[in-house]
Image (tube, rainbow, N blue to C red; front, side, top):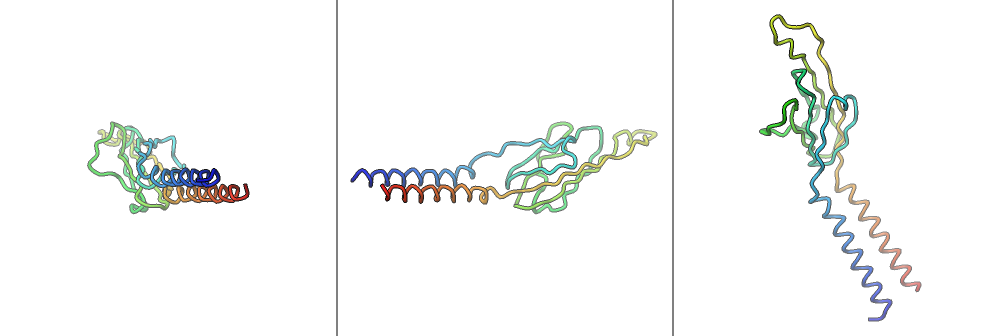
Length: 155
């Protein structure tokens, strides 16, 4: 092989490896576990498809959780969670939904019940598709390969 052909071959091999890693690295990487707390009230939480988070609002209230679109996000069933947590939630598909929690003070269960007010907690959850994000990586890798080919032909 000529030196120019060897360089072109090496560029093609490196680009192929980069594309392979771009496509498959995200599919096997474990998502980092997030913890959503009262500090996240009224915020937007961004997660990826199949990523989970722990909802931990504390023990001071009896929480009733609702999710607007359970096709986007739902609670993982039959999973024990730490004290003060209201469950693990998983993102199913790309989209947006709201998670709302109404908390009644635990002192309302006492006799006589207290008159403390309920508390509302709400987050907007945005679920992104990791494959769509990886598409940009593949695009830029192919673009870099094309530029390398043009430069190598000019030399």
